[in-house]
Length: 174
Image (cartoon, rainbow, N blue to C red; front, side, top):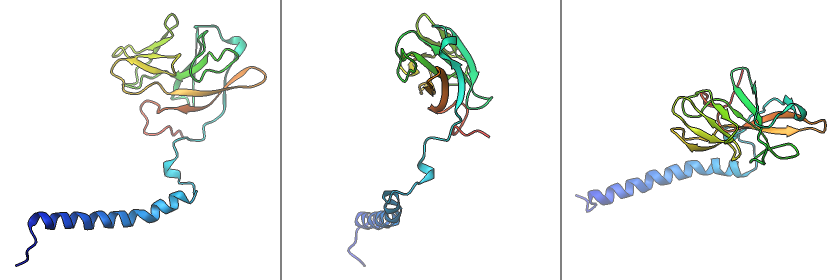
């Protein structure tokens, strides 16, 4: 019989398996550091550039409802009247968010007095001025925020989304 204990045998086996896994991963790591584009690691998609409004049409505290990036994705554009995280326009106060709550997809209501979005299903509340930050409620994610640009003519365009749209595994559209 051998003098190898059960504990020593298991430790040795774990080291062998761990070494084999590490050796298998090394070529992949080398490819990743070569600067090659690994598409499975990309977190952004090529979104369409879509005009949402003209700055002159926006009224402080009044929602403008539309969809982006497709017809199945309701969004809201709002001029807050005070600077906001990722806000655009001369006052950095124009923002846009998904209208679906990140918890169960309830359609959110905007309250201009507080600058917050409220979910009627479980009372989650999101702060528009702070990038859609979850203030309270069952949701575990902030609201997906649209990436906006303003051109020289004062037109507001959606060019992307930060965050995952409710009900999707990825922000992929047909």
